[in-house]
Amino acid sequence: MAACRPSLWISVLLLLTVVASRCEARTLRQKRSLALKHVKTWPNGVVPYIIKTASANSSESEDAFSEVDRLLIRKAMDTIEQETCVKFKQIEEGSNKKKSPYVEISGRNDKHCYATLGMITEGKNEIILNSLCRTVGQILHELAHTLGLLHEIMRPDRNDYIVLHEENIAKHYKQEFDVQPALYTHLWDRTFDFQSITLYDPFSFTMSSKPVWEPRKHLKNTPLFPLREKDLSFEDTAAINRLYNCAVNCTQRKRKCNLNAFLTARCRCETAESYAYRRCRDDRAYRGFCSNAIEKNKCYDNATVAIPFCRKTCGRCFRAGIFGKSSPPMKRCVDLEPRQCPRLIKEGYCYFDAWTKIHCQQSCGLCPPPDVAKRQTYSLDAREYLLAYQTGECYNRFDDLKCMIFAESGHCEKNPSFMTSYCALSCGNCRKQNSLDLSYLHIAQTGCRNLIDDERCNALAREHKCRGITLKQCMLSCGVCRDGSPRPTTSRQPTTTPAAKVRRQCKDKSTMCPWLVEHGHCLTKPEQMEQLCPLSCKFCLEDCVDLDPAHICADVKKRGYCIYDPSHASRCAKSCGLCKTQQPDASSSKRGEDIGDNEGTKSEVIEKVDEPCTETDASKYSPAKVEESTLKKKMHSK
Image 1: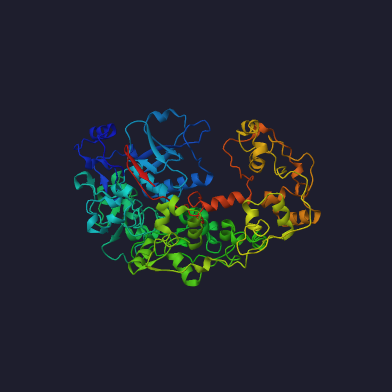
Image 2 (image 1 turned 45 degrees about the vertical axis):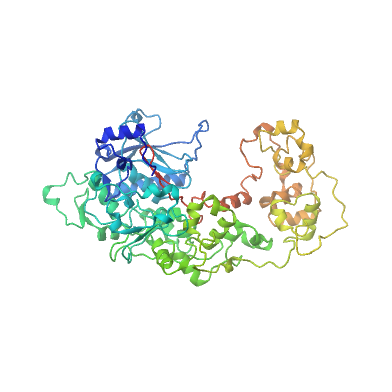
């Protein structure tokens, strides 16, 4: 939450809420058992909303919502509607109703995700869900802010329940832990809710992989799931029901509940135990999907969908007493792409390719030992990891293989918020603690050699194709060995066809191509230009021919290189059928396409695997950036 500033929005806020002109009033957050007394709620509990459509003409960077994203947004709304009297009503973007208060859900690529607290008197109330925040747990978190709920960690009595370690908090987020004065909040006589959708786990915002807070008492069976996996808690539900007076239509005779329950909109006294019993089940409409979730590893490899729709099967339930106890299934080590794996293994992809390591984990020999598999299953619950940390252990909370891949890709520096919290060991933050061995992830390679046949590697090397995947597969032929291995020689004469002439879908990749051609880059930088501007440089082959011998091109086609490796396919244009593609006009090139764009080939997928924060399906667990900051009356979530 941003520090208090004497700005216009604060002045307006103070006038609207008629509270003292103090900096304490700057935090506009509230939790189920914590609410600002003067927060403005939505009339009759009806929240009009639109889901903004990304516009190509917009100056803002927008990441359009996919069908899955919209499904998850609706799932979060359905959860609140099922448990409270609040209703979310979708309106059209051009509707006249936009003149009244409404919520705009946008995919704008801001650094943080956030939501306006409560209802602004007029116009648009924002919920920003960038590509990192599109899980049901995170969407519920932002919707809770929109309805008026603050963060549990800001309760005025929080120090009675937790110990805060300020020295472990990343400096930019210390204000996230400011306590709110009791004068401005509602507590409703409830104890601290460790399962609240508004509470981050103890390792969020950490700067050193150490906890930023710890409970004063043992939590027993109370889980501390990551925000993205959480459900709306009993206390969250009770808060919304009270804040929106959902029991207003209940008769006096039915308005009496004991201290441990609240009266629902259906005039029923709800306890934490009854709530946990009801909520811990798989969604009826998704029973078919959930029925094989364990067998297919969906709770891990498709967790973004599986967890909110298969809570019982995936073991991600709200718990109270003996109710809601559902253990997560053990993560299975399997090949996710069994048809592709044999070929990829044979071609040596296990040694260098992140996509293959993740999708062919079993065939690559990267399965964790049983004790590590058990640890990886349970350590996503921060309570289990916290107990291990307190006994001196230090390891990755997240999947070891993915942590290793993310670390090798530089994400310990590029995405420290996630990596310090989930991949402490891979990022080297365990230091002298009792850290675990990750040697099972290292595949021994016997010497420096070509991973595919020497003849094809030699041909590619002569054609100056030693880059990208080819460089990794043909280390010996490309002369990158450092162990004294000689570079092979061959009597075959180099082809007379210029190396720059490629057949791989002949089109330019940049609108800068005409300028580059005019300035002579086709001649001075042919290798780069054959990838960037083959059409403008006239590098496309006039005749459709195979540059390699027939038996090599037949092998290229048989092994699937025509689809998965353009550097090989371009040398076998005729055999791979690339000649059937009509050359597009240069004007068809798209602004902003990467040089390495291979029309949806596997190499594109590899890039996505290398980026831990862009996947929406849960095998890649979009590592949610878990930070929040309040600015201009907005609840920000990292």
